[in-house]
Length: 276
Image (cartoon, rainbow, N blue to C red; front, side, top):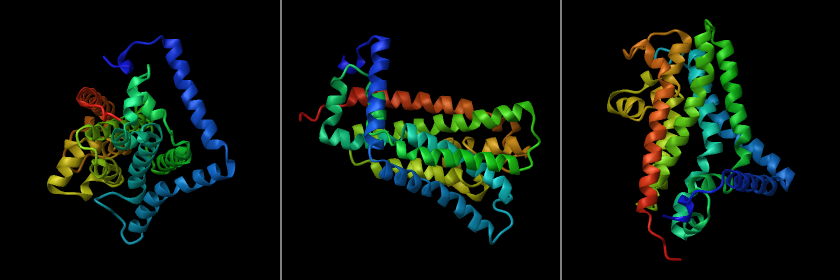
């Protein structure tokens, strides 16, 4: 058993995590002008996603059978979920570097959980602006889409983005664990995480064949934005799935958590120290 696996007193553990977070916040906000510029600059990625969709609809009235307002609901669900997950969990992408340099050995020696430590180390607070912008896009999209609101749809509008955060966060963790076997796996991980984000920005009907089957339903990306958007808009699925699929996002997110947790535990057991 490593030191990271040993139980610690709840109060002491919470205090240690709070201290780590506080140290990161103070370090990153020391130079306020630089921090503010980082906040503004980080909005760019999400803005670009929205602008790309607007440009496409500048030359067509429908995309995959969906109007601009309908597609923007999917964009809002996708961008808000990914941006918040990237803020909270995206830092795990540094794991290959930690494994290569031996820093992960030091993480395991501390009497705290390895995963929470990695998430709090260099927590990218500058990405807060991206998350806020993504949530703003979702709110505007939902209020302008002409949705026939019911209590169930209000609940789905709250739960679906949260499920998307959990799904993307689990994806970040699961793909990062590949580095325990293959240190140079960063590009492969990015192709799934960032490629998945791009996939969920558009209706699944835009894609076809094995690619749609693999990403939409094999990996579950359809349940981040496409299926919840159908349920919110009251539309039948052109691909033929039953109406309850639009409400399956929380269940799919829980499956993603289970897979990520299993992958993480397996990776930790497989890890061998760099010896440095």
